[in-house]
Length: 448
Image (cartoon, rainbow, N blue to C red; front, side, top):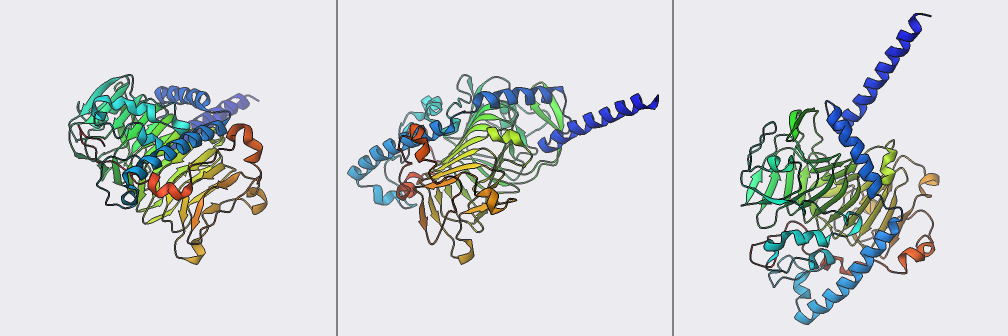
């Protein structure tokens, strides 16, 4: 009898410690201290605030704006007779924009004097993202990296500041991150006007935070971080376990926009979004030379990813890619007007009942007759996954590519009040819309 309270207390302590270890392990947080607990709680609130209860409204708005813009831009390009050149990699003509995000800012020769106009150009589920708009400019002038005591003028020193900042670079540089770069919220990393490579080291981590824009970087040859004491704020340093080696990790964060990135050859994923991350747009990226490209939702047991909502638009999935473009669990994923020119296993996969709306994409299957299918379901029998909503609308299938749909075949018709009959921009124009995917060679004083 006397031993029972002690045993109960001991079991409680074991349960509590085990419960603390699990999220810390998953999050690479070696010490899930009060600071990280508070951040996690706040991040959950932001996730719930960001979540769209009617996600089809966002896809509708995206499709409407894109169709209108493409129609307008096509007319302009036809007049200037540059459309044929835009279909090649050798285009050297005047600034020409090919999708509504770029139309918003790219051909202004004074873009460098009005960098923050970029905020007005976001679309899709990341449309609320403002990044560092409300803060000062921070100029990165030093490519070195000290992860315990970051030097002023370095990228790490910039991203750990607590106030909003718009971070730019004073020259071309290669940055090797010796540990993962843990970002505070309300930040924009803007690579325009310089050629900036994050390479040869650890990754960018957006964890339990909000409101981040990353634009115009080259990220490649990323490796695992060894872990250790890493500064994640001006007033906090904590122990980190070994990092995955993703190019960009989004963990429990909301209102994120990743635009015009060139990414390849990362140890794990190129871009991963997990643990309730939502309000995300990934656009205008160029991805090559990688196996597991994008993971949206890391675990079948993480039901918080039901709140995950991501727009994947105007991206080029290029040479020597294998799979996961993306691989989804839970959530609502709008895959729209992307160019899939290469895969070696499958393009779009998932488990645990994600909603995937594929619209106006171009899919070119590999030569292997056994790899023509675009889609792959995992960990569920056909009787289960046939109930998931995976719809393909207006996609262009080439070289024998095919998309195995699931769910209600009349799903779109039943959402006419949301879609209003508006389809994505035509898939046969995707090569044109993604012509300038990847980091741009922007020069100050000239249209980008």
